[in-house]
Length: 250
Image 1 (cartoon, rainbow, N blue to C red):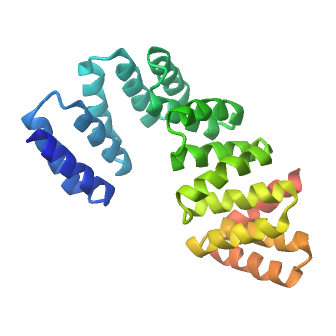
Image 2: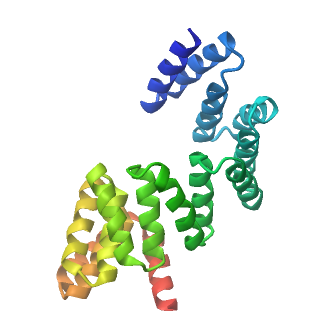
Image 3: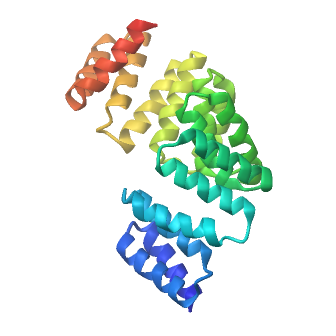
């Protein structure tokens, strides 16, 4: 029965019904205290809910009870990440990977932290290792494509982002970064096309309107660029101000 409640909780979690999910994960744990995946999911949900102390409680249980060293280090990493100790998180995730080179969750987590720190080459390295394990994971492909884009390796970015697009043609971020990658290669027609598709998915995104304005401006469509700049300003004046400051600083 614990397995039944875990699967039911997973269904609720994917639907965003976290209270129902928590109730069923708790039942799975009550029926089988060694159902470690349920503790992990409880920690993840409390992170989503920004109830970090509760998340740490469940991750700590896993650190104390988990039979595998790699899992112990992974959940120590999760605790460090919750506490914004990025260096500690990296150290623990990398130790988990050293213990188990196929620990895909650890590979993805450490890649994300390196990307957030601006070390995109490290992010690429870990995402490539994750991609070997799950070659058609939308999240891994997207993260890899973003890292390549930030490194200005636009052809490589396009290669993986186009695969991600086949997996899910409705992902706003995939379309947005495809636009950036195409812009990097000088293909403004495709940059505009992909960015407009991103805008369909999220018409209230200031970053998409701002990028589209830049591409219109580069192609010489000043009237359309002005419309997009104005919309970006309407949605988030501070975002536009920050982007312009960064551009002027280059």
